[in-house]
Length: 248
Image 1 (spheres, helix red, strand yellow):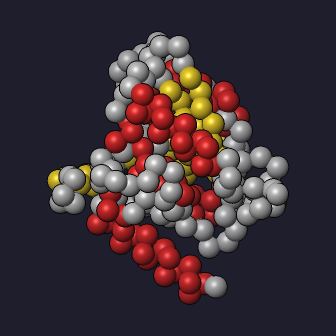
Image 2: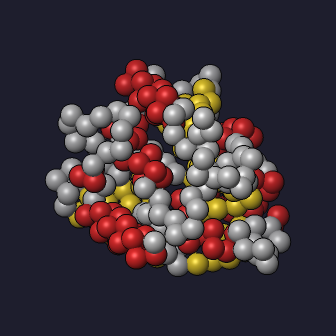
C-alpha cells in the first residue's frame, strides 16, 4: 500500500522539517513531533518529512525515542529519517547535514523543545505553492509562549522575527549555516539566505510555543494528548479543527 496516499501530486516530500536532537530531548520530543502531525490544511495535506539529527546524544532514552518515531512514521502518510553524527559539532553543522539529506522541496526548522501551532504550514503554503509565487524565502513573525509542567504561562515574547523557527526556504538555496561559528549562527544564516533569494516575504502569524516535559505514562509512538502542549496550543488546535469541519 502506498503510505503517501494523502499526497498524490508529489513524488517527494513537499516539506522537510529539520530537528536537531541532543541529550534529554526525550522529555519534549513527543510534543514537538505531534505539533507537526497536528498541522491543519484546508486543501490536501502535503507529504511531510521529519529529519532527526542525532548530534551526539549519549542518553539511551533519547535514542530510543527517536527510533520509536521513525518506526511510527514507517506506517503513516508522512516519513522520518535519522542522521547520526559522530560527535556533537553544534547546531549549524547539524542543520546543514539535514539540508544535505533532505528530500523536501521546502526546508523548515523546529527544535525538540518547541512546538508549531496548527496553522504554521497552511499559512506559508498559500504563498509558496501559488503558481504565480515569486517567493523562495519566508519569514514568519511569531509569539512564543512558554508554559511550565503545571500548564501555567511563564512568559510570552511577542512578534519575534528573523528566528530560525519562523524560517521557510527552498532547499536549492543550499547549506546556509556557518559551520565555523558558535555565536550569531542564525543571524548569519539569514543574511546568507537573503543574499541568495530572489523573493522574500515577511508575514505575521502566531506560529510557535515552547514544549515541556511529557506527562508521565504517555505513549511513545501515538499522538500525545494536548496536556503537554500548553493552553494556547490547544485553543489553536481546536479552532483549526472547527474550521476544517466548516470547510467540508
